[in-house]
Image 1 (tube, rainbow, N blue to C red):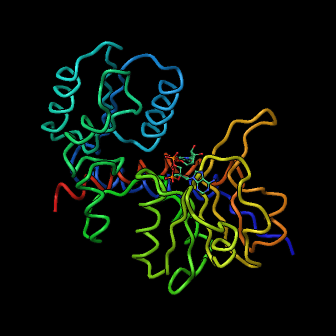
Image 2: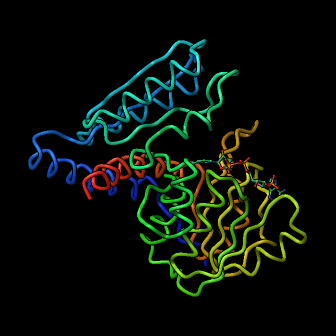
Length: 283
Ligand code: NAP
């Protein structure tokens, strides 16, 4: 029987609805909503679209918008000063510095100056440490989206054999820790893994976060597995994931499509993180 297709658009819409209700309750209680500050340095068209989409989605759920567009040749000190201002502003719950920043600026070093309680991308070393320790903090949005999708389809994680392909700080490592905290037995694969297909085919839950179109085929998939495809690859044939969907759908029990799987979850979880940040600051 072909796999159940995990509908990321539907799950993301539900999360956004829940966030909108939480934002409305906060606004009623506190007299003002949580706020999200976005910083865009330069005029990279793709980054401008990402930021516009995040601001639109956040306005739709009632989150206050603080946006700072900065000139392409802004200095480190100028960007840091804007971050510092947002760090101090009590109306700003979350701060997002759109990456990559223009050449000459160090995106990681600038991100590190964001207060951990406002780090809605969950990318600072302090947020990563809190995730590793399992203490309260902000987690990266895409990995949170992966877990939300699995939970929405009641995929059992406790005791499950989970394999994550990819070990980036943005996706692979945080998703592996989130799975570990849910008591999965986690293996992380990367470009030097020997026998990738052999390791992946043990997985009850397989997460592909590689950036290599259709790397994961039927040989990598255990019958009945849940397969989450984080990959977004632009090919001559259109948008493709890291998983060969047509082959995988015949073996898996659950699978995310590309597009319409993990993609829509990222912004939804960013909005949820803004509310989490608001609450963290008031603990
Ligand atoms: P990344 O930083 O480039 O990391 C890719 C990882 O894949 C690395 O750990 C790399 O291993 C591993 N890898 C590369 N080739 C491999 C191979 N042949 N076998 C096994 N592992 C291999 O990428 P990323 O930022 O994590 O993103 C991964 C994918 O997710 C990309 O397609 C990206 O566009 C997509 N993405 C989607 C969303 C979303 O909203 N849906 C969000 C973020 C990212 P090494 O460490 O050994 O080099």
